[in-house]
Length: 355
Image 1 (cartoon, helix red, strand yellow):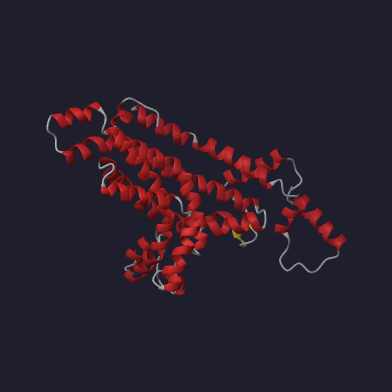
Image 2 (cartoon, rainbow, N blue to C red):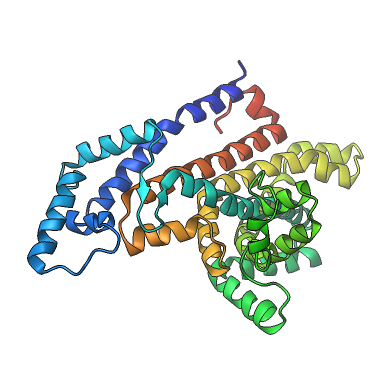
């Protein structure tokens, strides 16, 4: 088995351990809230006004019924056992099964992250290569200024700024994911096949839905991508500058190889390694950025769940399910970049270098 494939398999095998560590730590944080406060999530609907004594008795009964006063290892083991049996728990704020709720909201977040990655990878790599190969030239000076400005603006500030101009001022790119199509999509024969509005619109022959979805994605994708585009682009630029001093390029140039061939055929594959490493390290930040941008642009994805499930009330099943889904969203992105690195750098495939 090639060393690279073996390391990928080790990454996949490490997934359960990663989930175990993250969920164990998060469950401990949730348990910092008093048991009586967590018991409020299990109050019957339309509970009539109670006296203080009646409220205390009700809370004590709910705490005992749901084992909220059990030791931490017991409660965590109970949640983990339910998870392995397919029972992710019940979300009281949304009155729905946690797994069903997460599966319904995941495509919204995943679609936004997908298009952000689709924008970041090619534009950052191409821009960094062109800038680094022509260091101190006119394009390089403009590129450095653009990336400096981009890294200075937080995504949520940029999102609010873009909304004020392109929606409030010009009315070009509205917030929200579906707008006027929300009711028609839920009542018509429109089939949600992938969960991505752009893909499902094509599969259903609804080009109007595709056009509207893309229009609503422009500002969120730009707000989310800009910071990571600049980070990856700057790393690529530095890597390209360093590659130009390597002996193999000096030898190839002395043999008369054309500059474009040297730039893209020889220098770029070696410079792409550090750039993709920067993408791997930014993957978790990218997912966090997705949640923030969703809130700014009113995309009802996973971010709304964690806001109501953690900050409004400590809903343990919802927060724990959200943590599991977040890890499952980040790891495929990391593995994708690992595969891209191996495709560009033969040393990772042949010599078994660390990923």
